[in-house]
Amino acid sequence: MHKKIIFILFLLLIIPQNSYAQKKPVTDYNTKISYINMDWWKGFEDSCLNEYIFKAILYNKDLQISTLKVEESIENKNIKRASEMPSISAGAVPALYKLPGLTNSDDLISLPIFANYELDLFGKNRDRTKSMDKLIEISRQNERANYISVSSAVGSTYYNIVKLDKIIELQKQIIKDRKAIYDLMKLSNEEGLVSTADTVNANKAYIKSNSDLTEYQKNRARLLNMLAVLIGESPENTDNFVRIAFEDLKLNKQIPDSISSDKIENRPDYLSSLKMLEKTGLDIRAAKKDFLPVFNIFGLLSFNSTEYLSRMNWTNSVSLLAGSALLPIFTGGRKIANLKLQKNKYNQAFENYKKTYLTSLQEVNDSLYDLKSDNDKFYKTLESYDVEKQDFYYTDLKYKEGIISNLDLLQKKENLYITEQRLTKEKIDLFIDHISLYKAVAGDLT
Image 1 (tube, helix red, strand yellow):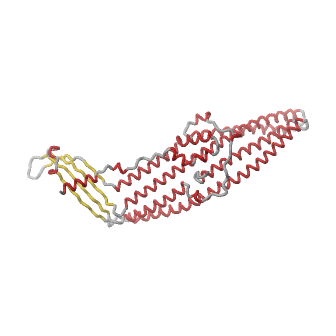
Image 2: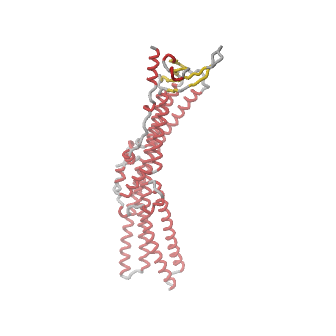
Image 3: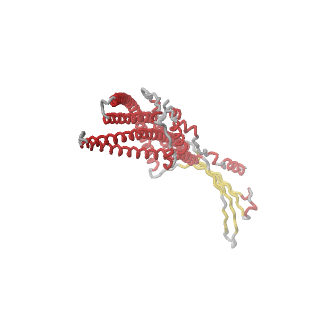
């Protein structure tokens, strides 16, 4: 009867441990889209931007790494969960033995199967597995944070490129006009109508405008290379990157009067700090349970034969079923130190949780304030630009009537271009401010 009991015991213990292992998580496309709130991005009505964001979701290397880190945390949890499962080992032990009083030796083959299982009566191992569950949740929030961050970087980089496209276009017109101004002043200087100092200043302005153009082009090239890396492409392909014309930009998004605290509590960093607080609490509980006894069940089943496989039966078997209860009495202070360590980590996690909440408030408030301030500044600059256009219109009429010179007209036109450049920068600043607010509230905008 005892042999049947031992046999059943081993059948119960020898369960494929892979059945307990979780499958590797695959963050599907719909989840990635939900991470970044793609509907919000579509509100810009820019198909080029949407395409770049889709490419970043699929091919950005940092995002692929963050997904792999989620899978890593799952496997670490599975390793920790193995402590809740029985351990089984089997093997073959060939031997040559000699008994006392005999001159000859005999062969022996043994096929042992060992089983060991720690009874988790106090839930210590289960607490440690739950602690690993919190790390999985943290890694998922880190993954979500990376998706929001990368999509924000794509949007900001893209709109800065659009800004530079327009500024470079205007700068070329400024260069053209400054060259014409310099040529006119040079002729006037030769005729004694203007001073040499004014002519030199006109030449300096023309040279500086060329230098500014070179700087704008260099910055655009760098941004194009950055965009290529963000979407997982080679920087060699930047010549093929298309974008919307500045004149076609649409800013239809509303500026919220205030931001609810619920949005702050949905930020990945806030949720991560909360999960870390919960994890350290579980670690403290497990550290306290280390002081309790450890209960184990041990089993052995071995088939022994001197004729190798010809007599592997119950008659030649050796079986053992035993249990133990151990309470470590002296461990050199390791358990006490570990408990203090876990409490220290909990205090750190708690302070980080409070800091994260305050930092989140600051980032949201800063982003909202910047957006409102830049919005006011943009419309004031727009008024100034409209005035410049009217001024240029009347200046052009005076020129056509012969009241003023072409030099005066060119100088007014340059002022108009410079104001338009400033208006371009401030309009793109508004787009980037909206993206900054989007990032601050973890994409939770409509």
